[in-house]
Structure formats: structure tokens, C-alpha cells
Figure (tube, one colour):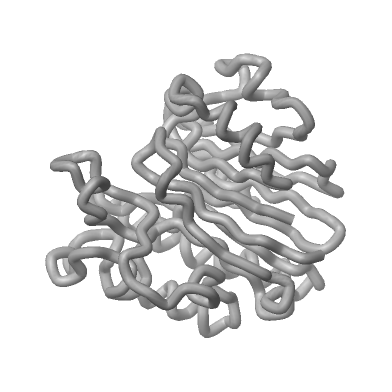
Length: 255
């Protein structure tokens, strides 16, 4: 199975840049999009019902044109759930969970903490609640995969200019410490199982030609719980895919 994840920075915007053609050509078994910035009723049929796929949306109830996720899957999920049962997080439309026979997949757009101290606090509270949530799923016997825009670069290798960003949200010690705890719980950063080299980034500022110079950050991930590690046959990023300030990331899974 091929699973892809991509922060599209607006599904309507990326649709005008050839998204559907790319989607058809890539033909993943599952595609998770973040930051859709749209409710389904704002989208055309080709985005809500792409040929051969189920579509499952979670959209912001706070304001339109903000946040949002969608998971497209060729196979019908056993179950679908929006959010994690906590209103102040769920109302922003940041999580859609699809359960399949061999795993449960959480497509997540984690909060950005750069706007204010309040949003950084919100991000950290979301992080804590999310880790509790996936640990609860594991205790229920679910095999957890989560993917999406985590909005934090884990280690110095994961961004081009770590020294310059030590006091910037997205590379703060408290954010990176949370990612350490995710790893300590046994969750596997799939890309690093296959690629230890630097300069593998998934987001670039739209200013000053950062993408062309590959001055970026790796903030988009696929994590799997340890029991699924043996099933991950490859993990990769697709920096050549344009249309957003992020690029897609993916894994190949044998189940």
C-alpha cells in the first residue's frame, strides 16, 4: 500500500495548480491532506468524490478558510472519526481518523505556535492531548499510524538553519522535547529508518526563493507504532511536487 500525506495550503488553490492530475497519476491507496481551508460544500464534485476514492473531511467550525483535513482512501474504512473528543481542539478541524483492518490512521494538522504565546500554549496542550489519545488507542489494541504537518522540526538535521531558529516556534526545546517523548513511546519516524542524510525538507518559506535554494524545514511526518515497523518497506519525500509551500511525504506499507 502507498500512503501519502500533504499539507496543500488550500485545497482549492492547489486544485488550480494541477492537483487532480497529480492525484490520478500518483494513485496512492490513501492520501491525507492538511490545511484544506475549505468545507466540503465549498468544493466541486471532483474534490469531494474523486474517482475510485472515499473522501472523509474534518473542517474548522471556528471560521471558514482555516485549517481542515481530508483523507481519501480507495478502500472503505471500517470506521471514521473526527477529532479526539475535546471540543477546543476538535472545533478547528485538525484530525480525521480512519480505521482499516490492519491499522488505524490519524491524519493530523497540528497547530502552529508562531502567532502568539497563546497559540504556542494551545499547540503544546494539543500535543499532550494527542499523545494521550494515541496511547489510548494502542491500549485498545489498535495499530496506530499518524501523519501530517506536525509543525516542528525534530532535530538540527531537520532544518537548514537550526542556530537561527532556536527561539522560533517550530524548533523550540519544548516542542522538540515532545517529539522526543513520541519516539520514547516507541513511535517510529519512518523517513529516518530509510534516510539518515541531511537536507531532506518538506516545507520552505515562500520568501526569497527558499525552495529553489533548499533552505527548508522537515515538519511533515509519518509515524508508526513499533509493531508496524516491519511492515514499512519504504519512506520518502516528494520535493519535486509543486503547488504548496509543503511537499508530499509517503510510506510504502505491506499489510
